[in-house]
Length: 437
Ligand SMILES: Nc1nc2c(c(=O)[nH]1)N[C@H]1C(S)=C(S)[C@@H](COP(=O)(O)O)O[C@H]1N2
Ligand SMILES: [Mo]
Image 1 (cartoon, rainbow, N blue to C red):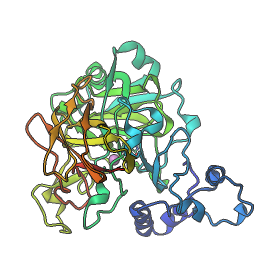
Image 2 (tube, rainbow, N blue to C red):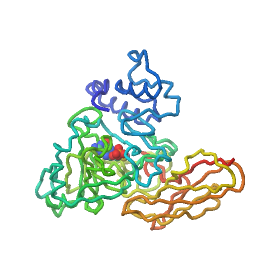
Image 3 (tube, rainbow, N blue to C red):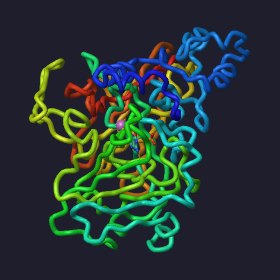
Image 4 (cartoon, rainbow, N blue to C red):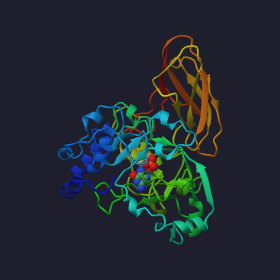
């Protein structure tokens, strides 16, 4: 995942437009016909269960048919069971049944990279610095991680981090971008300091309206003047109790691919606002204008549009809080269970900045629904756990559907909601298959 991106740099130098197109196509690629680098050969061989005698002749980027046609995902260091959608940049999601834990373990947290992550050797918390600046910052300052830890109070929250494009694969016509199914979401605990405390220590000018972040990853072109992504949130979100500059995830250093040694976490908002490998935060007197802030990135039409429409960028607005959603994490879709045994189903539900007030489940394609038991969140912006006991009176194929409702009465739709050009915000009900035998 590091610097070796043969081809793309050269192409960028010659024809940046063509290079962007190529990267875009790669990103749009539905699955793992992707591009593997040679250092993945070892992982590949172990996944195949055999060495590859002619490895030296393998075209760069070829994924062995033995893997491409198998259901087994190839491995990513520190991750377990993730499905790779794209490996340059690396994007991998978590199958729903691996999100069953109440607190998502690091090995099951999805990965969404917009660029080239910094080399692991450079991510040393002892030497890392975070700069706070911007035209609406009174006194720009730089903090080491040790200074952040010693100067400000520590806070731990369990926070939902969900990619704005989670669920994109269900849009018709297809939207370009990673074809996430349901697994670009996680809810680990994060420990760090409040962004508010740090910004207040530097002073926030009256005209501040937005913050923006910068991370240490490189733009896919390798061009040092560009950032892979640099997004932000309005001041009100930035100053919330739960918005953290975090150094730990589940009481461990943040995993490499999830932003070690520091990341911003803005729970409940598109995870693109939670900057990884965080090196700088700017306080802005206007909406931040970093890479991927402007429409159509992370923006949706201001009014409903017909599927497939072209929407002028001035008719689009930036996504803020994510919509209500739920997952069925147990049992795994496709299980066979004996008749005459009641079936426990469970999962999580979340609603952006809001709380979930109800979850309902159906086993008859939505004709009837029964309420699930729903727990309160451990803290604001954490997902909530639900469970239900189901009874089946005859053998056959069933689907379990789950539908959550937020505390403002908004429900998950059964069908994929509002088509939008980039395929964001699909919060349609999750369904799993159960065979009663
Ligand atoms: N520096 C940096 N931060 C980033 C990104 C990135 O590519 N670089 N991707 C963003 C997006 S689009 C998402 S969905 C989340 C993914 O977080 P994860 O990879 O830890 O799951 O990180 C966000 N923060
Ligand atoms: Mo994302």
